[in-house]
Figure 1 (tube, rainbow, N blue to C red):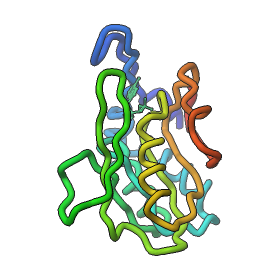
Figure 2: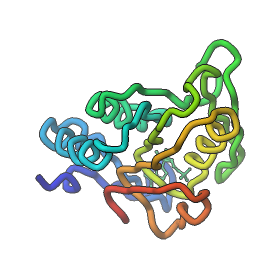
Figure 3: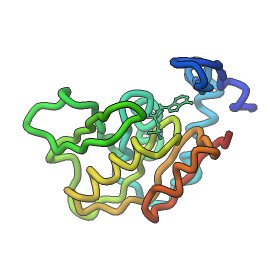
Amino acid sequence: MDIESYIRTTPDFPKPGILFRDFTPLLAHGPAFAALIDQLKARYADSQIDVVVGIEARGFVLASALAYALGAGTVLVRKAGKLPHEPHAQEYELEYGSSILEISRDAFQDGQRILIVDDVLATGGTVGAALKLIQSHFSVSIEALVFLMELDALNGRQKLPAVPIHSVFHY
Ligand code: AMP
């Protein structure tokens, strides 16, 4: 199964100069989506993962499917203003301005083994903020950061702390 052929690349979206990597055709194709999740399941089957964390919004889709495949739970890292009960928050810089990620205060139990999942690793700003959010408030073991796609030229992984990083496809 050539999973990669279901990733669609669109130039100049959402802004001029951005090569947008869209995996919604892969999600829409049952056998391709299953092959992707099975591949990730095989990689982490022996890692005793308790929770797969998804980053809003496209990370949610991958995280929940992988969590189900691994028999793990799913935790959502959300954009600001979506979670009740005074969540923990982490601000981070975007190309223009800044944004905030949030997580529930009761997201994890001490010692849990987790994966953090998103669709794309670009500059690393988003997953870096998610990592900081989790590491500064919880005592969990981050087994890996998992991406469907990594944009190598942006050197996102160099800006991240020493946590294993796995990307299915590199561009
Ligand atoms: P970054 O914080 O720069 O690592 O960007 C990661 C986030 O932005 C991910 O959640 C992606 O969904 C999105 N993103 C960044 N660059 C692209 C791209 N070229 N194509 C699709 N999504 C992207």
